[in-house]
Length: 495
Image (tube, rainbow, N blue to C red; front, top):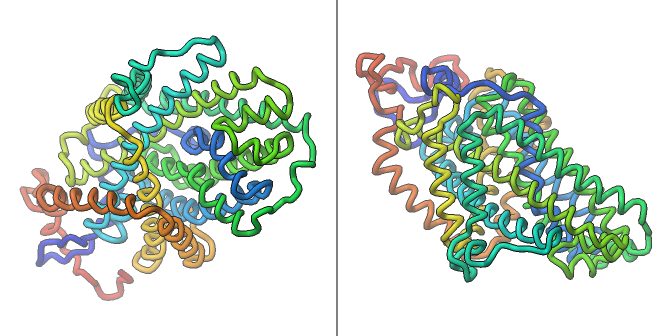
């Protein structure tokens, strides 16, 4: 905290990193350190590889042609700059909350609130939308494998002609129960699901390579460099999810080592699989064939390799892939909400850790029920567009946070350091801003409306109940800002 002892901290008050870390050991408010590097890496892969690779490759091939392979590499590079910044902050500030917590330690409370409020929407809407997609893919699998499907009345939301989406409710509540049970159990289940979906992609790659031809690679760049970059902008969102790893900072056994490895490692693993999948797809199907279907990988195997039954395997892979995405994203949302509640910006009673399970059970159940209702009944076709802008906004602030902390806290231990800072963080900001500028005006309007609502809640509740301004019984009823006797800019302190 950088406020002086003679005045109440303002809306740009910054939480001291040592204070944030010390609160993770408070009785009843600390999460159990239970996951290692392998499980954290699997979380990253679980969040990144969803329906994106099963669908987006067709859209990208339609724009870039065979050069969609380069688009996958370019999108990975664009994500890598932000991934490096997440890795530095996650290893230096091993506290739940991800971008929210990092912003609190660098840009101040009001900015932290904005990004936290933004992430609550991003993660919540993501889970609801992905759960709806899970129901659709479940029906596709049942149809392709067994020739049956659930009736529309219980398989679609009112927006799509049904009554309520039962599969979406089921998967959200099932994942909620698993998350309540414990982070260790959740990580183990996710590890199994990640293994299954990587095996499905590996099956596609191997079959494609055995039926590979080079004829579809000419012309390689039919739309030139512009086509490659335009496809990369589409494909970029298939990589989003590595940031969810940082929400597990507080529960990592060795955050200094495991978090950078998991964040960067999951991005590398997914990039390798994405590029190999793109090469295999172009090797057995033309870009036009991939673009013309909602299931490009299944179509490629059917038309290029003559394996009509592959649709069932890929549909199963999509169901498993989406299940692990729901798990990791819902986990991430609960940890961000938990951090905001523990800081007092939202009701602190939700930041209580269940002593039996070591998880914020009450909070997890509440969020799970709300998201299940959202997935069952509420139209998501428009609001889901907020997900992209929210993620990119978080990327901007995390990259800026690395630059600021390097200047304000140069002495702070950094187990992992972004190389060539501030050049790489600045590139991360530029890539994110470029993609944000390409989003439609309607998305920006919804984003601003959501932030206005969030600011109203902050000034009516969060500002007054923040731990920075409220008394603590164990300190004789003295608020934290009054306990801090450190001058705002002490002599010789680089802050």
